[in-house]
Length: 109
Image (cartoon, rainbow, N blue to C red; front, side, top):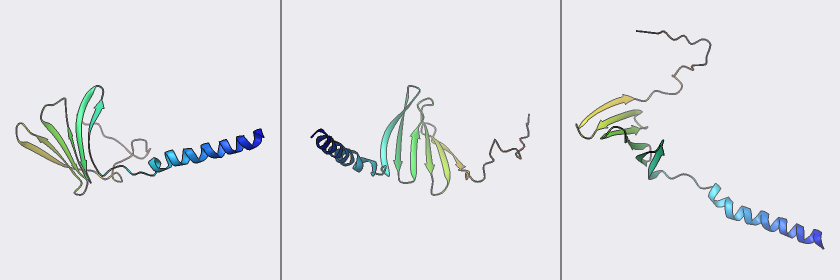
């Protein structure tokens, strides 16, 4: 009698765990969201829309970083002075590996 009830309880808990956690595991992260990222006690508002993202820097008032993955560039904009700086995003394939024994770094002064 105890073996039958244990078998039913195990199967019941197994089915319940699949039903309760199965759907949340299969969910994908959203493409568009707004959030507040907290790092070392500083709050940084951030927005992501598809391949574009925007992060405000709380340490420097008015500095906004916009990343455009489609065009592979990063724009740093100062909202107070209305100035901006564009910088291309480097491909990860072209960045040298620091731990590679064939890579030589030259120190410049």
